[in-house]
Image 1 (tube, helix red, strand yellow):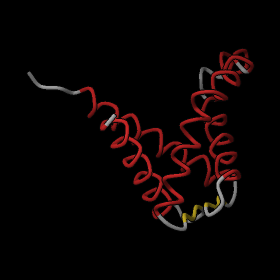
Image 2 (tube, rainbow, N blue to C red):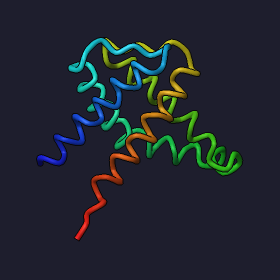
Image 3 (tube, rainbow, N blue to C red):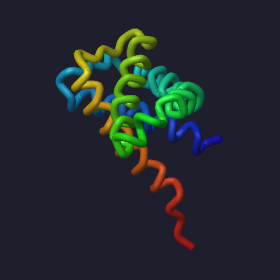
Length: 116
């Protein structure tokens, strides 16, 4: 339970950092980032697998590059649902979703990297 809360806070910090780093993304405060972290996690758990299955032929043709477009569109959808976060344009959403994905992968590697 503690690890889940820590991951949630870490994802919110990642969202705040991406909002600070990318000029087209604005995040009002940390509470907004916490809500966005929950919304992004729910979208990734329930909506993304369905969309990935529906767009599998396009994804195969583009050798997986279309996944970046799907991530950007889902990020824009998440920011549409959460008041207090704004994304100005697809390019900002694309760069923001790539950064969030990279940092989330790094976060999950830290979580599973246990020394004996």
